[in-house]
Image (cartoon, rainbow over all chains, first blue to last red; front, side, top):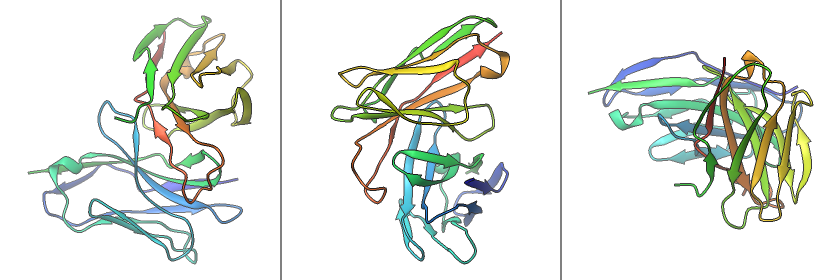
Length: 111
Length: 116
């Protein structure tokens, strides 16, 4: 079956530091890959996505590249802000509206 | 603001009881999915409804059931509650027919269910 593994948190960084959150996946076919963000007390919001190998998703300074050879979709940001503090979920989809999520990685950014 | 609203926001029940959670989809969306998010875990797919019919189900027992209404609002019903059912329940609406390339799910803020 499908699965997503992401690095455990919390990840604690100072403002303007470089961020990497690792994500690897297992899938039977050719999934689309997503990063979702969950701010405290809120639902999930799509951060970025990639639908085929070597695609790069990007949004709000975050980037992730779909690497089929390593089955990975690592999230990166060059300079984090306090407002980026949230829980980040890597996910995959092989069908309409059905997502398989990782366990989430909490990011804490201090001033 | 995603346009997806869930009620109630918090709920406390005791073991063995039944619960109904509600979701109002974003306007124009005809597909709703429900997810269970246990503490410290990622959301897990429960089931999906499209045009009032169940259209896919995850690894959840039959005591988890749902309904979708003609106005595309939705309910999640859980019978015979167990302690492990304590979780955040999320609904997400979308428009079926779009390919995953263009697909976007809109999540509600969830209902936090505590089973004592």
